Length: 505
Image 1 (cartoon, rainbow, N blue to C red):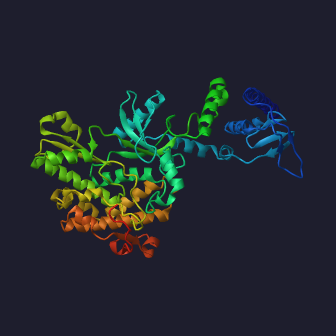
Image 2 (cartoon, rainbow, N blue to C red):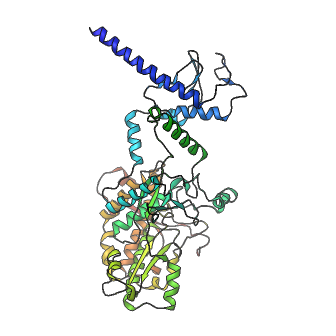
Image 3 (cartoon, rainbow, N blue to C red):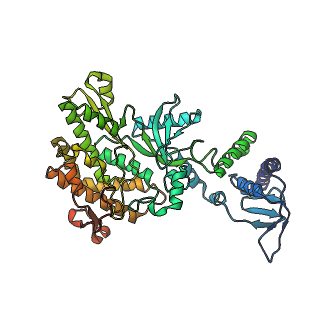
């Protein structure tokens, strides 16, 4: 009885295998041209193809390799046929160079499921941001694609909802200035023709999207509320800058899915691959700081509005100094100003007002934080100064409200270590994470925090703060090896030894 059952099971499996084998044969005959003549010898295992073998055959072999079938042996549909790894001739196999997709087929199924789950981002702890991200995905599915921003040195995009309203700014990792898919050809020419004047030696490569999200994390930990909410997400849209191979693969898979859904459902992914990058919430009603600062010179603010603007300005200073932003000019931070006669109840609810005595509304938004968190202080050609240090607001000492808000946090070593741990969790999500480089970044950050703590205790001004000598606080070897609670005497303090050549730019 057991033998008969096993024989019936094997016969059913053979039927299923034969049916799937016929389906693959039909797809191969309709989608792929005939194979070129191949000669094979045991002395030389490398196959020799005739001149009729063009680039299309290679592309077709790669398309077959992307077929993620449950039974890889189904690809051996005849003696003269293609496989995921090479070409079959009789019972012998000529293996070509394995592609990325062929190596991916050797990964266990559970690992593949975990990788695919990463592509779908969700933020249950932040319902507002999660709703914004879902609106962006729904808009892309509905055909409302992100629009590329013309300004800037990297590929950045306005993300819109179904109604076409801008809700966020997406900056992919591989479209950064050093990314291989950067769409700005002027930056590409600058990188190729004049590499000595391109980039910043104090910053790690291709970490702009992490810097954007990390600045939002620091802003949230210190409760500054000047950085629009920013997180690391994955998005895919035809308007992003993809290679021709990615477009060709996506179109081929879509056609196979439409004609042969039984085979298409076994694909690892349909459509264009998702790009990892930073998605920042779009703020409306803001203008460049240059516009409002010029207007404030002609039309001075009231005393209550000045106090409100000064407090917002001090929060911007604290953020930039802690993360050591190397790109804070007057064109990449925004100001929202609503005069007293135009303020209504709805606007006051939408944006928090720190000064209850002022009926005007002034808010600052710190955007473009992708060139922060350096691994060392600038010490070569340029100093990358803070341009807000030249404003008259930078000459005023830090207010008591700012000191009460920031000083208790940064003066606590446990808070500083917790901040570094949270940043490490964020930076570890990058595939090229280097613990040594990250520790150098945190050494600069700890030095900035210690200088800021001293400046707040002594009631210094932002201008006096940036004039303090740059400091680096590194962990000692004993503290790195031990697992005890960190103390300030567990770190080694040092100052910058070399100054940059140009200090004004």
